[in-house]
Length: 374
Image (cartoon, rainbow, N blue to C red):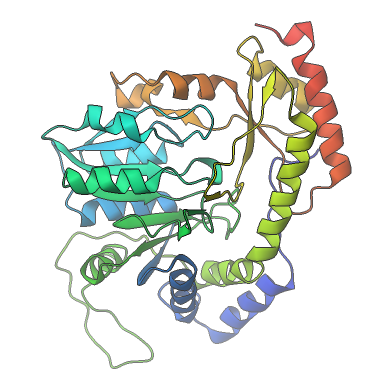
């Protein structure tokens, strides 16, 4: 089976993990967490970074820190994993979904204003599959309307828009280290911001609401609990793995871009398979390489057929407004079409050109086969 994704681990991660195990500090908020926070700040040009257990917990903490509560509404990119909407509901607020662009899969800035009302408090922009949204326009909309801006940059570590790194446009931004992401520790995430007060609150809320905590390098302080916090910390073992991943990240990005271009070369010109667009001014990190199949093709049948060939594929991601949980009345036709027709193809560091040629050959066969028509 050619997998959809496969993490790239080598001696670099092992060395960092060994250092952590030898140190005896394997829980969260240790030396490796501090080193990770420093490196992520440098990578994203932000001032503060707080490692967390996953991206979803990071989004939850971001919303809590910004005061999002019951009765509020938060605008959310519709084409995303449900974590983006769930985090809003964790706060008792209502997600309002906005449709996306068919070529970039990202939220359409021009549609955001239609969902803004007196209940609207924030915008969550999702950088779909590794490419950033039109953040200059969206930042202006947020500022004009007095709204907080959160970047759900789960898929976009290392991406940029107009030479500004993912994570820098948002008031608070969150990245994921899930197993399918370019940088992974299996699970995990990190929150970044330039606001020191918010950073301190996020750090406290991620550790049970502690205002101060025992630190092996400093004097002993008895923790106090002044707010209801959570156990959302990232272990130092996981932080060590991420440090190894970051060390070789430029090499991984170069490889994924190379492989994406090979896919583009073989698939461009097909009337039934539409390749992803890398917008001018963007650095796309290709967390996922997803094509859009023509509407006459039954995408789900193609997924099953490719599996029979020993090739793992998957949907791109979800149209949130049609998920029963949200009981949404928002209409997002592009997102719904992408939900039904996007097909994620294998893309990982060790994927070979020969394997891509085989994948493309089988994909073209299946989309042209009458058994896979609707």
